[in-house]
Length: 158
Image 1 (tube, helix red, strand yellow):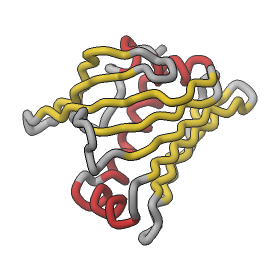
Image 2 (cartoon, helix red, strand yellow):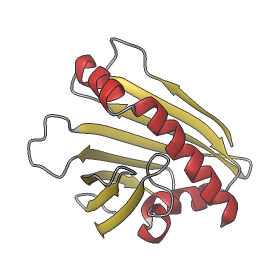
Image 3 (tube, helix red, strand yellow):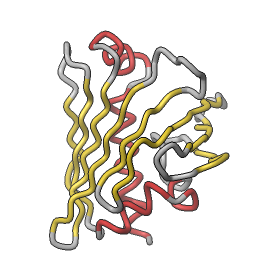
């Protein structure tokens, strides 16, 4: 894997993560869309993930709990808006609460790169202040880097 590189400039509403995985695009896409795969790598170091439901289609929902190393459980919900296999996922991510003010939009692109996959994850928040809060309170930069590193380790095993 090369990267991950994260861009989270203050005053912007986005966090953008990019990296190249030494794995075919179909495999990387499957790792993002199959609960048997995603539960094995999703989340920062020390976290585990339990999927309660995963329906990868427009309007489908992925409900999961991230279990923190401190014993705290973090419920999450992703609602898929667009699926273009194996090129793109677009979804809304929240804490599984309707009208969650911390909800954000995510676009993940999977580009073929001669047997490798160039991945870009673009998270767009309601405001720059909300993005800054997520970076500060949830350590989103470090967590994003660790999550992509865990994905690279998982892909190397399968």
